[in-house]
Length: 243
Image 1 (cartoon, rainbow, N blue to C red):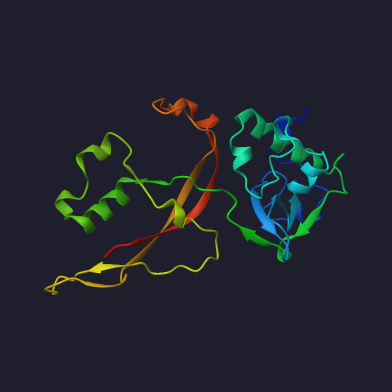
Image 2: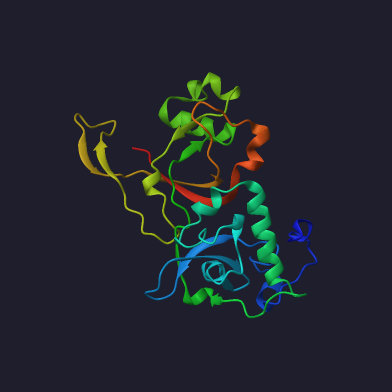
């Protein structure tokens, strides 16, 4: 059984030397999931460790990693099957991966791929996307743009988090070219609207929470249960057409 208490031990080291260098983004305490391919090969699930990627799809196929007792969680080149499993399995799987990479007793024959040789892909299939105003200042600034300074903050903002559905199909991996959307435009001096590319494309740095497990329709998820439902977090750039 993996030792869950050691997963984030700051003194822990990996046999992958680049994971132990000062300033690395991916020490053994931080093993983010991703999807990658090499050349024309298939998409595979992996975790970053130092300047390499540990191939979880290959580990699972060899029977060295079996999340939830299943042998097909990492077979489809997407992380969603793992996300659908209980939180306990998430923790056990991460602890098992860390044990394999541990400097003391880890398996040095594991399949590693240099990150510079890999192409990264969107690691999850995004079924829905909800955007929330994270701060009073943010909500006020946007409200000023859409209405006026005196009516910038909606009265209900102080009582419940305000969220709205976004377009899940436009969530893409880093490095994907961004296209200005086309739509109807009408400036303050224009008598009639025109059709064309967005002239006021806004960008915001946001924190995304990835919800893994599902809930039955009509059954709310309480804040106290969030830990059992949030699979992880990502940073993302949110592009918005402001005109």
